[in-house]
Length: 326
Image 1 (cartoon, helix red, strand yellow):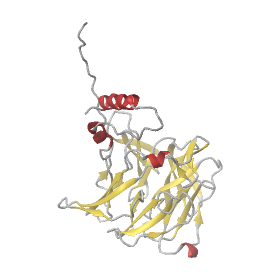
Image 2 (cartoon, helix red, strand yellow):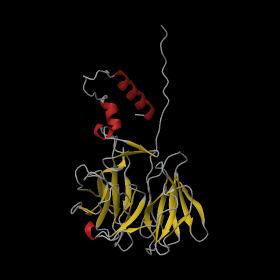
Image 3 (cartoon, rainbow, N blue to C red):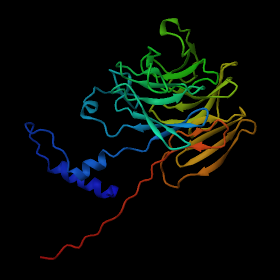
Image 4 (cartoon, rainbow, N blue to C red):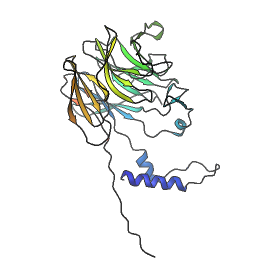
């Protein structure tokens, strides 16, 4: 059913519902419920060897329990004080591993009600790191590729994003409470044994550098400029040796290093761009759509010959109905 028509139907259902506090919650007609519960487009993450792809199915509409959570308005953000994360977080409810050679899919057993965030393959393809609030606050977890052996990695409220270093010895993650930080941990050590590495503080404490991709030589971390209102606005890199930042653009999202340690792939609305560190210039690589929509975080095959990405294409129709005169 076209999106505009479904929105009208939903508005009619809600407007006609009784306002009495004694009435139970009412469900919309089955056809509307089916539209609202339809699965969203999954995110795609190829395994390091290029033989498998991890399909992450996003959560649908927030539940009543989610809407009822407490909310604090801080600097343009809506924060849930119980989790130190967004009031209505976006996450993934299911993970599926697909064999690209034959299309066979295998569902990964994930923790019940975990609401996974930003799952990332380890460099050897044997483990998956992800964020979840299954313990209350958002934290980083690691599990085997089949979903077994789930282990909590961090104990710092609000941990999210989890890019692995090329050799698999480090994972970077970001937090915004009690302050903006990007932190590096050892995925093989217990929290009590960790020697945390904090990236240098930014000159503007209201901004945040969220690490997203390691260079192939492991010397630099590409990341996103996170504004106080939660918007991502530009990409940059952090040099782990000089401990300095280099902002490359004032637009764009999800930067990914190519194997040459020189170029970065990133997205902005309906376009894919390529930034060259030597020339300090970017070029438009592909126009995915001319609609004002966001492309999901892209992924590259190990040989850099294949780009994986998703985007949502919305369609709508205008309906005309003749009304009989009285």
